[in-house]
Image 1: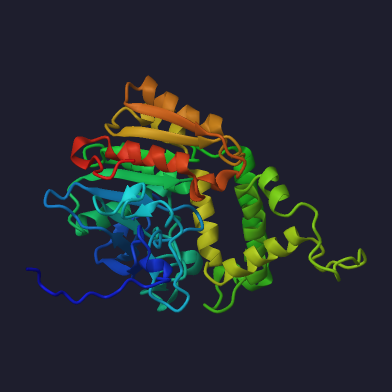
Image 2 (image 1 turned 90 degrees about the vertical axis):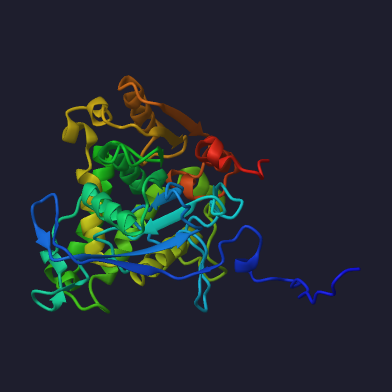
Length: 398
């Protein structure tokens, strides 16, 4: 004899956020640190807010946490779907979720918008309690280390006793490396992708052109502009140029080639967009200005430029002397912003310092942003690196 149980038939075409492997709908939260915070520069703010999201559940021993660190233009929304009309997925939603490479059935995943950012965390666009106006250029210069220290306070607030791992690409990789260096007893694994121990002169030069585009826009007004205004033209240009460094010649050629925008785009005597790639870059610029603050762009790119592990610790090897975390560094063959040799240097320095480290180089033609795009090879690397500990070995291994 069986009980009659009323069940709901599955939806024929379920919403994407309800599909298998999806975190589902998520909402951001705010961590408010009420005490004075001193930046590396010595400047102090009376407190700060970090906007963050979490996925999965912290275990009883509080040691199954994975921290995700975002890149320059990223934010706290790295997985799941925002409960808004647009239902926007997180920027690393392909990597994070139940059964995915970062498995939220096993791990408690945390991602925060960095200090100095503009997506809910305290930054130049936040209100300065001393003036009751946005900080603007009065905001202290922020470093990657300042960002990491603020996130450490968030993790303490969340009750995390130990990080199972910290993962990031590009600027996120810099943060991940610093977690291993600054908090060796707290951080068990570091996975740094498409990153560097310090930027090259060329990378600094690209950032400077972007900053000048912003600061030469009259609407920048020395950093003092209204929330709904500011150097929108300058910021759009900065984004357009930066985006070119995130992709590769091969990927741009494959996606756009020399295709014209349409039948009417055949007039060489105009500066209107003639080619599809021009329209794409203009779209990138316009969409960026609707979600990012120009002053935050200035501050964060300066933080990237100033990041230099060798200078800060005497040498790259010395930087890792106290690091106890097992580290995996991943480079991508077509990344010309932080090329593979810069990633290899990190792994070699760790090995010279006697640390547990490995290096993987993935062959792609997608450029610097390869770490964000779908790649089964990358997923397998991430999964095996995180789950080799017997306590976290997947019951669903492929």
